[in-house]
Image 1 (cartoon, rainbow, N blue to C red):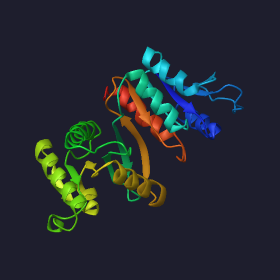
Image 2 (image 1 turned 180 degrees about the vertical axis):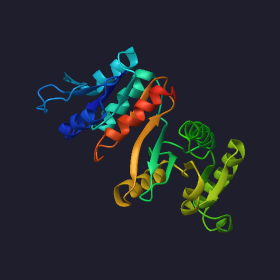
Image 3 (image 1 turned 45 degrees about the vertical axis):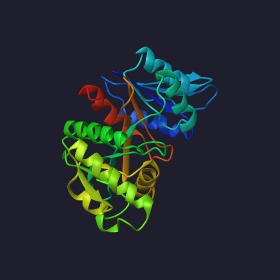
Image 4 (image 1 turned 90 degrees about the vertical axis):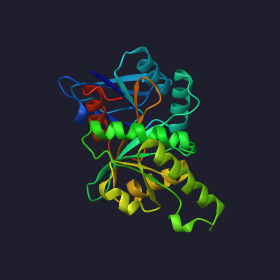
Length: 253
């Protein structure tokens, strides 16, 4: 199989991670900017240079030249905007596999600030997240968070709306409304849905960048090909590449 990964900031780190993830049955292709000085690739790693590596990566995915693509350390805005244009979708829907410092794993969405604002999107995230949790052997229990407890209704109209939306989405998706209690949800849920994209992004950043947790990548679920988003701040990409390989092997979409 062939997996592509983008090399932007700290491209050498991406190439080293590719070497850790490559195997006799898996070739990792690193897409880098023309002229970038990179370390000699390990066995099973190929360097591909382009004036626009984000476009080369996505074009190869769309053409079927690689089985999956990982953003790696390419800039988020340019890469994801081009991905949307190639696949003709107005927005991207991402579900991240997160792990707490204590080792608890769960699928989490939304992680993009423009995602998860409607009841329909929350239901879609819950259903896709449950499918992924099942495939990864995680609990299928799905918890939708809101901006307060049921007893907080009336304190602020914005809080009231998140509670109403979570109640409606949970009922439609066969999920549980966990109120604002993420500390309880993480104990036994394999899928957790934040109230909206802003709070979801903040939860992700707090867990991964401040709380000692791990982000194993975010699968984009509303395009037909396998694209895994990642953060340029990641310590390495071997774990994300390993998850991507499993997604291909188990035909998980």
